[in-house]
Length: 285
Image (cartoon, rainbow, N blue to C red; front, side, top):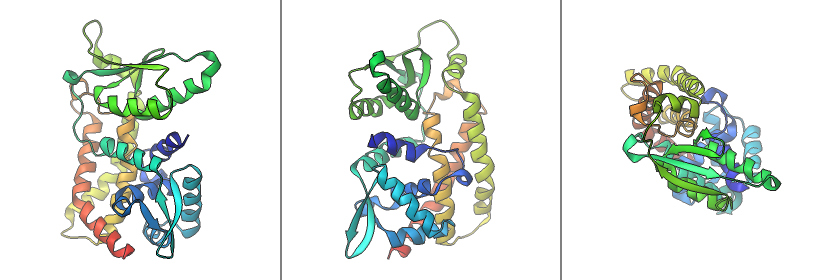
């Protein structure tokens, strides 16, 4: 399934640029810089840009081939130049990703919860696996067998996923409020793996806080340097909003590490975005 493959390519791996695969950097570059040109980049431009990230040409070509096989990229020549364009499936996942990756505000308790309740016959257990995998990818936690929970703002993304995967006949979506019994903050730690969340956020901070401190001391910076650091921090960041789907701030610790990680990412984005884009424009030209 192309959408499932695209989602995995966009979010797989640990939350650190050091552990990222070349294909993840390629997806980041396409997401940031290709859509203004119809989702297309020449192979030559892509090789040049990935070289700035210390990724050699054979690794770029191998990763492109893999993304093509997964239905994310399609070969296309323009003006005599060989290149690849994002597929419709890839563009759809990028649009969904924009809403997650660049969403600064957390959900609130007033907005309520989204419950996904599903029942899949044993004879179709492969669909049960796909459904669970896709709900996990979207950031749902498990409240009970067959009952998954997420902040209510994920309603449209979840409904779209169920339709795209032909799973809408196996699930119902409900808007819910927690009315009584139990400490929701404590239950949230059961529904989501907070130990893993904290580890991933801490790894992100360990890797990128020194980079941010270096930029804070700079009066200016080269476009290439901005491009490298921005692509690295975004590639590392983009998995985290799927692991932590904007859980309500009221239920999180006051010193929640995810808040510091978000502050760091958005500060680096503001500082690096323009310089990085200028470097890419010059490289492509």
